[in-house]
Image 1 (tube, helix red, strand yellow):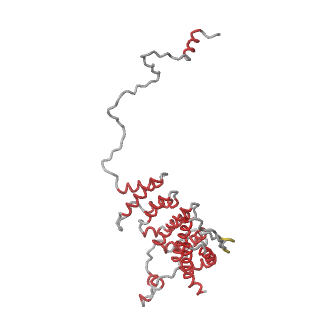
Image 2 (image 1 turned 30 degrees about the vertical axis):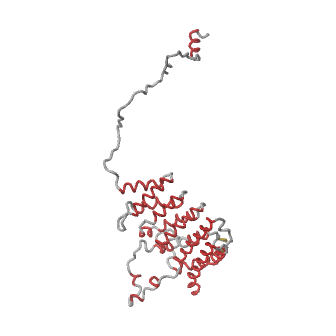
Image 3 (image 1 turned 90 degrees about the horizontal axis):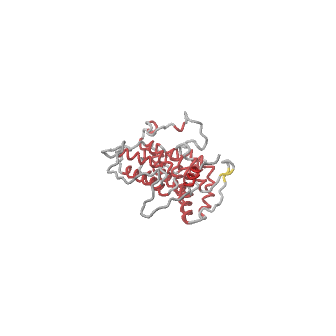
Length: 337
């Protein structure tokens, strides 16, 4: 049945353009909303108004939570605030937050993509209490090794800077914690390009072009300097007070061995209740134990240092100092052999 004439006219209206007459406004659409009104006030049903500012501890916790921000500038500014707060603290005053809460937020920033964040982080680390840092050395070392083996060269250099600070603050704890000696030595050998062959039984030092640019020269020189600092702490000649305390307290001998220990978990080297450790994860608490572990790797270190000395300049001087440290540290061990 054909459509009626009325239906045809209605359909035709949809495609006809309205003719505008001079002096008349355009007709408003069917869904038009009048927005010409003005409001004198805006009423919010629920709002939070505080008459007092948040406490210093609350602000500290707020900035601590901002360290996970994707904005590098926000992360850097929060680190700057935390640094100022900790630096203004008196030595005997407690931290605004427990050290176990602060540390997990800081450690992942060791390999942050932005150099300014890593630089500000190092300033913050220098304000942390020495005793708390010494108790958490194992957690520091794990993240430092991740940074030292990072694919970005600048992150590797900054991680070595953090290790240098850690050696100044807690050097003995670094070399005597589980994996602190063996894993860091292997990490340095990998970073410097001295690679292992044969599953740890035989070593070979390949001559690699360590310094292609001025930045590479400074990076390699810094790595060698910290490597020498690490070896001095681990196998360096002990001070007289540490080597022999008998003459000062005669006739009482080895009194310090019978006193209550001053550090937590003093029997950790026995590993009474922990999982079995491999050779690299063991605790090398004595200088002699560290010398014994390093002895098979001494030839590869010597060959690597010879290659670095040929580069001359800052790298050569740093390599000479490392070689002197190795010779002095391993001299007593070789004499005993």
